[in-house]
Image (cartoon, rainbow, N blue to C red):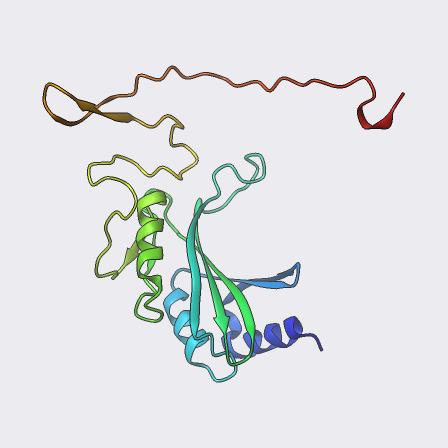
Length: 198
């Protein structure tokens, strides 16, 4: 039995009906759970002797609104957490979808793995995902006055405002974007013997 098969069997035994989906792809397992079970599953993944995922390596937000050329039907926002079990030398991707697209919210796992703190703040800042019971959920990468969440698929590439230094006021000011939207069409140039064809 391979390492992936052993991990999958352990997950199915320990988590049972809390598993919504489990996928093995390219030598990695992705476990999807429901938002109501997310925090409880996180604790179980850390504390169960059969699993022992002691470390959170990464946590990020995802926006599925343009996934699969717009054919995707399901919740828009997802949180993906990458975990490591040093005890068993296993890696796992844990996914949870936010049930409400208008106010994407899931439980904070900061109490389970304190490494989640800034990762959750980043996902809040860039995607607008709210982590319930996070003790310091505020912007991390964008300015305090920033409007919107720049990693959302519907956020304009040019943004809403730009900032510049005003010499008269001797300070940085914000103003509406002055960049003209443009469409970039790549120019395709083929050499005479491109790809060895004559």
